[in-house]
Length: 444
Picture 1 (cartoon, rainbow, N blue to C red):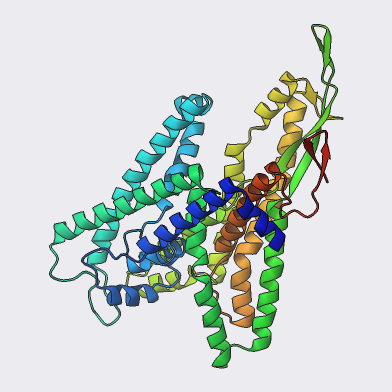
Picture 2: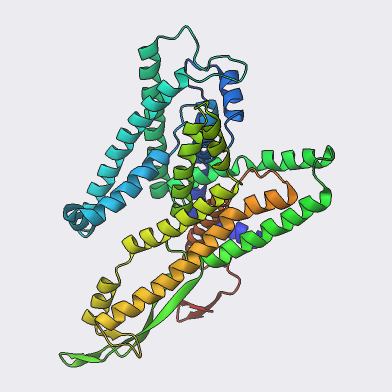
């Protein structure tokens, strides 16, 4: 591992990209501590501590605590992610956007521009909603979150401008990391926001052991289970089902083409972390809204919609399954896959080209999606199950774990690609390099 790290810094381009990425993440963390004007920080902190399980706590996890402190980066990159998902859905619905997506770089640039505009619109709406909501918020002791000397519309305008500018800046930071750094910029910002709270969670666990609120044996069991889950996530996120594809021989001029064997890789979890994020967001809304209604039966429903409760867990799993199948249906069209395969002379051995191929691919996708939904549900529900069994408070849910591991794998793969291009050994110890006539070949 030490030799691999040395190889990383021997490549000038890779070294500069890593340094630039770290600098951008450092700027992100500085902005996460610059407060928005007109806010009583102590009252806001007390209010957030009383909002466990609400949508506020859920989004605060992705901003690295910036939302709880209401800093200039309080909205984080969630408006950009929402705008990106909306554009993906609209691309399937509107033929114009679908044509743009197939026009190469020019079309993608237009879609990116539309995504940016959508991000600004969502930031304005969310910023205004937050500014209005802050006016009615107060700490448990009755202290108002907004300083009483602030003008109402002046505070709203200042908050909207500040939060929108912060999101726009983070969007720019993410794009700069994509162009001049290493890894996916937006994903790394979310990754940094989650990872920054890990030291605090470790210290909190140690304090629980020292105060006899948590048994050392229980903490050890939970730590082992976390390591096992991380390895399971890595395995599932890198797992593919390879459907064999055979290409028939054909004559073009005086040359023979085809006759090769290939495969169609289908990822087990093709929807990524989108289903858990969507499901958590939808379930957090009722818990947040009912928390402000002082009616006994409403409060009872609100209590059952908090993470760890049976009703929440059942609805969470159902929504994860729904979004897994929904997003996979958007990403993959078995009919188009079969048509493209047939157009290039490819076929699946034992399956007739055309309709039968589409039905077979659809069947495989359905089975893989079901397995991926079971895997996502298990990872996301596991913290709640451990909490019920061991009564251990978890600072991170399964969604955060999936994001951290997924982004980490993507970052390692990109570094690995740079190392292999420069003839250096990477992290993958199974890969061996042999030189033939000055060229580099890889052998597994």
